[in-house]
Length: 398
Image (cartoon, rainbow, N blue to C red; front, side, top):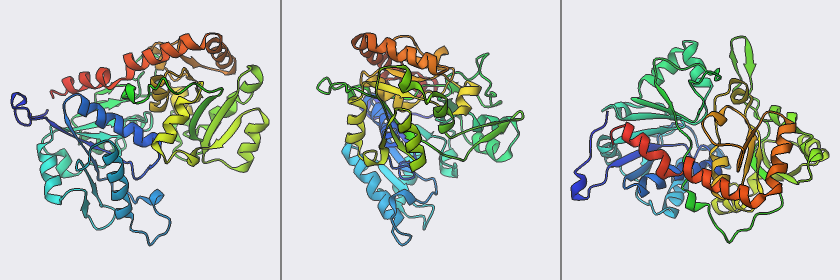
């Protein structure tokens, strides 16, 4: 499937391109998720490049319709990549506009595609172009299971043609293919479960003490992307699941803080009336360091998952939760079937209802130090780049 670039004995590193979407979702969680793959690849001895060629207007970076969105996107990517010492290893292809290439020349980008050992379609968010598909080195890496698998089952031609452009397939749906998973296996595409990647030492800072609150970061209401399957509607918005655990603060002597986006005054009043602390996620989510400090300064994470992943038991597990674990912060998260693939019961807990959630929080508080050590251990064992990436790269022949 792949072809080597140069000779490793001569010191030539193989180039790997990650197709991403940082300028479409310019928030710290998405950026950290992207950079863990790039930094992880570099630490493993590869030469990583980041490219955006998704043809989507970077509207979140624009304050006015007259703004030069392409220039803003290029500046944003350039700043992130320079922070991680990857200046010169990126490109923004303004397919939403005039097709100009920023960060490197169009010719250099063409050569990069041609020379790369792999081109990874992160999120599956880039519609493949001929230069991505040529050579059979395009890899699909899905971070949100359920909808694409169901679309394949339903015979949606556009989805099938999109996937057919790829030569290999990976998914954060860690339970896919197991007996209790109701997400249809997207035949004939061989989806392989693979957990999100974290570079653990970027989060492990003994100088930062755990704070008093269990926290999380996310969107409250996103009333779109619901999907129908076998006569039932499965929801995307997480507020449906939060409503099921509204009474948790009344059941356990423990403060909880939700750093939220996409919520209104009524939502905040509802949560605060039930004992939840609510803060504005966007107040710090544009800053990589502030976002990391928020996680490191938490006692642990308490969060829910999307209804789609819960009821269909996809096994989805959040890269944000993996970051909490890497920071040595225990995680209590809604069960999606990930318990079949990850160790739980110490440092990491899945729950199916408010009673189980309260029990998990109480168990952590009874010996927080022990659960914190185990959380960090799970991160190193199950999510660290040195554990997750080598099997995939070996499988792909790189």
